[in-house]
Length: 264
Image (cartoon, rainbow, N blue to C red; front, side, top):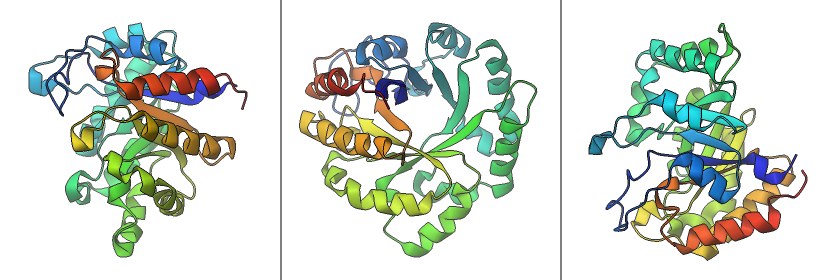
């Protein structure tokens, strides 16, 4: 297997972040186009954009993803009502590359404490035991949300337990130097879970361009952990600035051209 086959896109509806988070340019790149542009073979799809009146047809996006190896959809709403997972299972019957769902921004400023643990267990059980095939359950977790309060981390392990995998993201580029230290905490929180790393190609946390240096630093670190068998891959964020000549995207593409075809 090639390294690039372990890379994912964090996809959003095209153009949904125009004039937001400090980006004043207008993008038109779709998630599938971005996968081709970055040279990667998997995507999560997060239908953000309701704030701009964007209506997402999951079926239309799934059709565009036909040639991808893996596809995952965001489904945080199922934490309040586990029955909301059913449409994703039904769609998996029509699209064989759908293999997981993900709960974005899981902690949400402490609101995760309002999620009944039995709901997470119900979602996990239904995803793994259904009429189509087993699907995996993933969570987004930010580095500023753990490794600060040991008691909170210990309690949070109860919420991590039902998940198959966790994606570790660093929201602010200024926190990128903390990644090695944070990763050690992350390993302790996820002793049995599969792991992915998130890599922002726009600095959303500080509303400005990401730098090529920060991207290269992260990808070099993440590659080491993938090769060591400690993590499964990397998730690039996102398609919504990919066609705007920002240096972080150029750095990511150059890195993928150098390392993407390595056999792992």
